[in-house]
Length: 402
Image 1 (cartoon, helix red, strand yellow):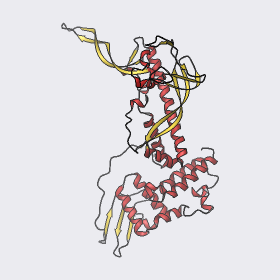
Image 2: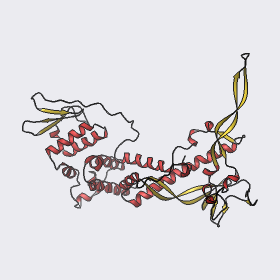
Image 3: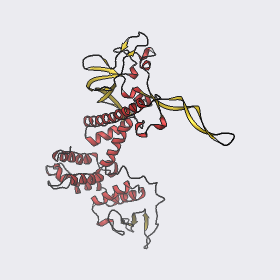
Image 4: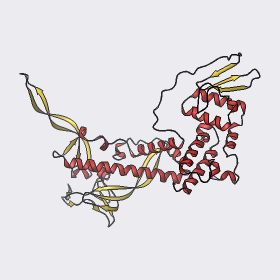
């Protein structure tokens, strides 16, 4: 659970983080009885109405607090005569409790707010949306801080800064809603405790803090980016493979080099030939690279990178450069992105589909082609990937899945 940015180290890293503004809902606490101002003695009802539509109060995240406390616990002890007996002892443990009313009032001058008598850090407000006996839902503006590179990734996936900001805002708002739901459950759990608190060890893990809102946003964006590039974010990570196999010469005495999948041979005329030395991507061992299309070779290159077969990827890229220095442009031509004429701007043609293709086929085709043209793995210019991305979004809108 986030429990506000005051619990997160927010030291600014110049240029490394960016702040996004968004709208979200908050839950303001309704006090069961008036709270006495510790200095004036005035009774204050919470939430405090600033206007007909605007209210302020501690929110559900402010009401609950985790802190160390001395508690009595019963333990079993073996007496000198060998008998077992239960005794009580005082120990320090972490507990969850509700804040006391006086804690909501400022203790230092810098904690005072102009519009209400409560501490700025333990009171929030917004436009009232709905209300019940325990909480009032309000709308308010908020911000989330995320890594600037994650933001750029979101811009790349959505196509613009405006869409990326909206996308991140929706994720952050959903994360806050989840935090509020968990906090309400924890609040009710504490209210039901006869001793006034709940031991931290007794609180279900799903009701405790797990990440800041910013961390949740970053995780969602990164997982989505993995899927966007055809990478399974749930796939277990494997350790780096051992040293690749190498072969200094083939049976004819020609110099060779091999990884786990690719073997290249330098011929006497200084041309390079290559073949598969293991089954890969549906192709059998001993397949001659020369019989494969450039787009198929590009697909193999991306898969080698995905599987962290670094040596094989380097060998295949060296083969492509040797047989055709202009291979990147020609790969784009093979998949229909070499120019901007009317035919090649048709989203169905760009994804290699007919207009009667299903939504599932559109998504599958998009993932496959993006693996071939994504600039981080293919080396192709970024506009190739942007063209595919634009075509995909257009088809999603046409098929009603935008």
